[in-house]
Image (cartoon, rainbow, N blue to C red; front, side, top):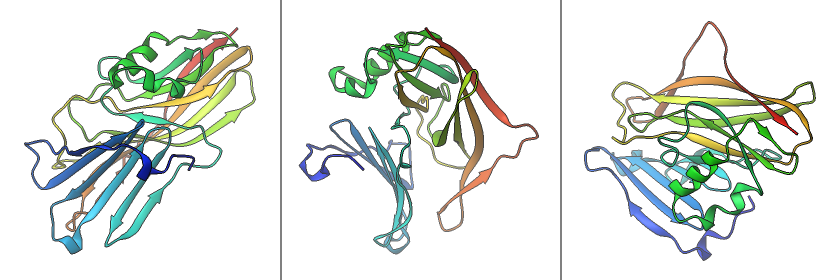
Length: 243
């Protein structure tokens, strides 16, 4: 997966379960731009299912039960690398699509800024709908601010269509916490950064096709994702120009 050996990194972190949360434990570890989050319900050891997420220059998710992975979602091959965050964009990015133009791949200079919030604030200042062919273009898809945790975003696929304007199509899953699901009491803004690169002059449009789910848990404590059915397909759009 083109990542450094985790045993060679200088990890920091530990238990980050909010004080008011009962029945569920969360541990977070950070090193060299990577964030590993491990969560699990407080049940009998033989019934414990660990949800593990790796975020950074790549994304990996899986569920572990009795030392065997029940599910595993590594990055798709030949897909653009993505960076997910849930707090850094609070108060910065409204719900929707944001076009970012920088002098280089924003993944290359993340470590130069002191905090995660500085990183997203810098990218916010670089948003535009008109950029140069010498700029490095990235796309941010944001869910906007939410009063609690439990809201997630996940890019499922990306398609480039050579048309006029050129279409950049994404399939994205949005998940909301169901009734009774324990969430963190903190402002969040689930978003994803997708570096694209330099583009030729012309007209472009980003289309994001949304699929929504509600997260609940069954009597065994296992997650259940319920699709939200709609009469009309939900599509977010944002046009931009490269000169």
